[in-house]
Length: 383
Ligand SMILES: [Zn+2]
Image (cartoon, rainbow, N blue to C red; front, side):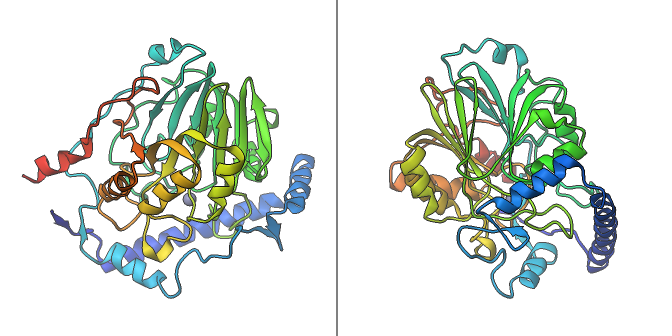
């Protein structure tokens, strides 16, 4: 085990915070000025948001009343994040990686279900002859101001240009590590449809994605693409990109039903009993893609712990669990490999089948990869 200093002095922290605050204020002022001239589409969108059962008093709300941070913990988080020593916040060496080969994806038959985890919450899926790209985040850094954002632990295993044609881009919420402006703009020429929760269409239109390529859904609404049925399902989380747009756009998880396969994609969420309801209504799921990392007791009510993710899988009546939201960015306070270790320990206790492919590895669901604890390279590097 190694202990690493964060490398941030108090003066650096104050300087960066002030500059970040100025940039956020400036961009918020610009978006406020733009909002005074709303288009007809936008007026219709606002009416639809206001009619949503999830919308209350000017913002979207969770199915249960939870705080984003536990009382009094914000300063504690800042101290731990910027001034305390931390254990293994990032990998000691290069992570193994397989690059996506477009030709391999073009050969996948309609009857097959293949996927590749692209790091963090990004997944490339081929099912029922359609290609679905989930939360593509492929840039070097995940936040708007590249000089302050956490850098990736590994390169993306594919560029937008190298991707096969995409039938559906699927988004769960508007946080920067799930919805990346440059990648979405580039995908406009490659993707036929952008399927998002209510409110995110406005952002996509600002990024020059035409409204006819955008479908926005409320919880429990669905949309069909070929033989695939997409249903937006509840999650306990929040939304924010700037200083003044908190909870203006909905967050969700996704259920995807194909001819022979059912998939669940978690997005970010705290644990709540609503997953049992989703499992009863739309399960069982052959594969659940679940968020396991970036957790802490301070904010577990909107970012569940690994053990809760295993329980979520059970509630959903899941078959195979594929862990997401770890090994790409340092967004929590835990060692970078801790989420997978805690998830596997919890899964083994109750015989939940978990697979841990290498980033970029193409997985055929009929020929599962052998067990490969690739994150243990850490021990070799530590000596
Ligand atoms: Zn989030």
